[in-house]
Length: 91
Image (cartoon, rainbow, N blue to C red):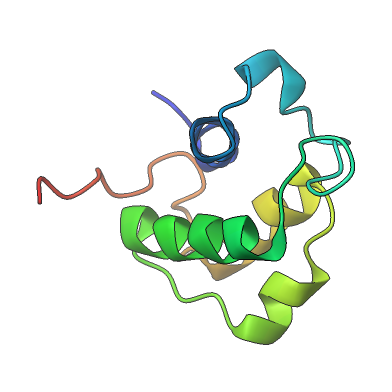
């Protein structure tokens, strides 16, 4: 079972074409992982789609690190769903 935090890390690694080992909680998205603002929006939209949550624009603007992204997602998941986010849709 993969928890929500690990799914966030995997998605960030995939979207930024980075090895998962580089996507550590303390890694800064722009400085360390070379994400630009368009990539951050793409990551947020993908997290919304894959996890069935809504991330307001203001929250996206505050995300600086991988840990920030994980905490943002966990704060928006229904209580008790931290370890079992919905499976990605087969679209």
